[in-house]
Image (tube, rainbow, N blue to C red; front, side, top):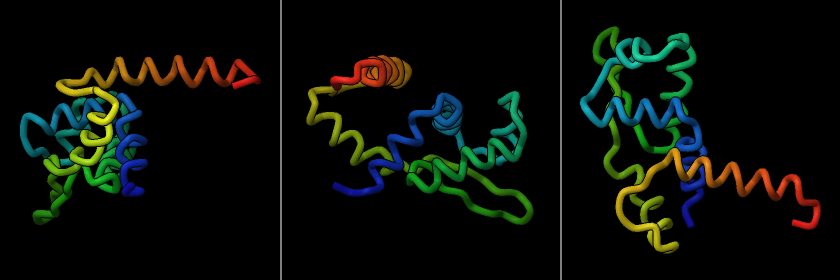
Length: 114
């Protein structure tokens, strides 16, 4: 298995990063435009974008003084293949997946026998 798969799932675990991906699904955007959609600093949004880029989900391109971001359409391919193996075909609700994982991990953390 590709170690980048861990980076993809870690990147998707954060709701802000999932929201950024949703924005970029609509169109390519400048970093400043992405940042204007969130109540956090430009530096924080830049860090989220860096995590997404390291996971292969977003590509960044510098055009003059502006950095543009766009989705990498192949970024989720291996994650999708991994999830299909568990029978999770079709559209996924990533927020529901996050809630499920938090519940499962929370229960195991509380259960010393797990």
